[in-house]
Image (cartoon, rainbow, N blue to C red; front, side, top):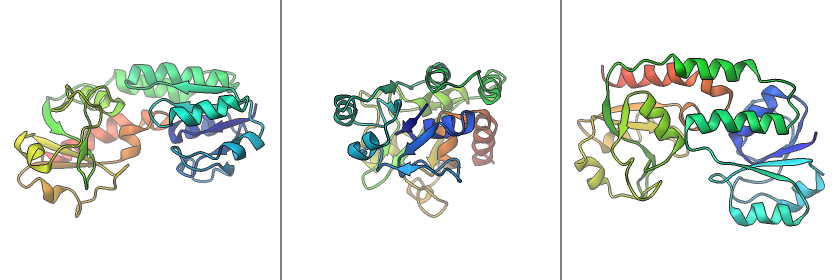
Length: 238
């Protein structure tokens, strides 16, 4: 198999499980750190001729990460494109199995069993409300029907904008503050929130700085995610 991945999460998934299969990945595919493949542009602007030149048997994409015109262009070039849809943990587990089977993985990997068991074993110590910014200037937050939102709900965090008509609404900071969340959850991607950049916008509200990869990536990190995210959320309430 020769596989090109346009999704960082899926790049890590395939690289860890079926070494040697990947021949191309995006500039944003940062895991594994030693990944040595041809880079084919970004998730939103892949280099279609470069991908075609690699003669892949399969291109991996995602309906949220990648643009429909790029997927159409790849298919028009005669390439087989597998497009995933992942908006919940259960979807992620199913889609990861489908991707790995399509890439020729001989068996279900141990890390996938460990991830499923880790999330099944999760027990909630309580619930709290939160807003979850993913960008500022302008402020954008998690809205309805998101993978990260589903993970947080399993951790006892109720997203105050989970019923918003948009999946990633742009909202003024005053509105976010007036929602009076118990907690503001600040991941370090796609916007890199830090101790000095983010919490100050929500004075008087507990802030949980979390690893964006653990909150938004679906792949081997899912095995570590429930414990690490739960620790970060607990620390914010101390």
